[in-house]
Amino acid sequence: MEEKKEQFFEKHLLDLAARAYQRNYPAFTDFMTTKEYRILNRCQGKFSGVTAICFGGHEDCSRMMGGFFPDSFTDAALSMFPIVCIRIAAKNGKYAQTLTHRDYLGAILNLGLERSVIGDIRLCDQTAFIFCKKDFASFILEQLSMVKHTTVYCEIVENMIEIPPQKFEEIQRTVSSLRLDNVVAAMIGSSRKRAVELITQGNVVAGYEERSAVSFNCKQDMIISIRGYGRYRLDIPSDSITKKGKQKIIIYKYI
Image 1 (cartoon, rainbow, N blue to C red):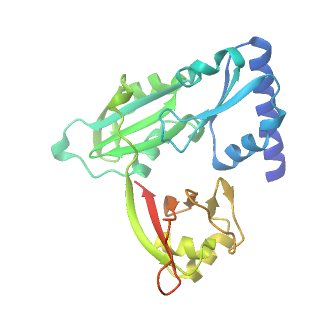
Image 2 (cartoon, rainbow, N blue to C red; image 1 turned 90 degrees about the horizontal axis):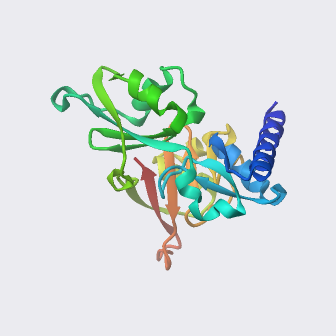
């Protein structure tokens, strides 16, 4: 079943690339999963007459669309992506709940929208910045009035400068090696046994691929998503070996 899904998505990408080339106008995917992103990268050599570019609406977005551009469009590529950013905030901050990424996403999906039309959800104080497909922005503006028990208002962010940078929680750890099980355990603050369970059960995506081998060697700046725990970026400082031979790492957890 999974293989058929991958084949179907690959065909979809090739169809979009062919459409962009034939019409001499860009064509776009929805927001992609990590697996779909990996398939697009794998297919790069198969796209004829177009350039494939990924973008999520802001320079540091992690959930992205794929865009196929004839050569004449590549200079203006990012501005042509059909992505809108919506600001969602409590109407009365005094009575607002503390809302999470999951709360905002759940409220939007409860409107009947698919996950593929929603990109990154970025939190800043009591405000959320939601990247979505342009075709669905008006619907969200009209229909979304509550997130959990908090009454909210929505508006389009007109100026990209207003969008805050992605926030991270910085965590410093040491590990015996850069094996995936060691790194995952450090990221979630658990035992190596728990990390092994998560990896072997298919709950860990590293470098945009699901990893089931606990001995997989992690690399600098690798993005690691752990189901139920969140998304992380790995930093391996230079001269990062301790006197006891352990590896220093810095973990940036997406907030």
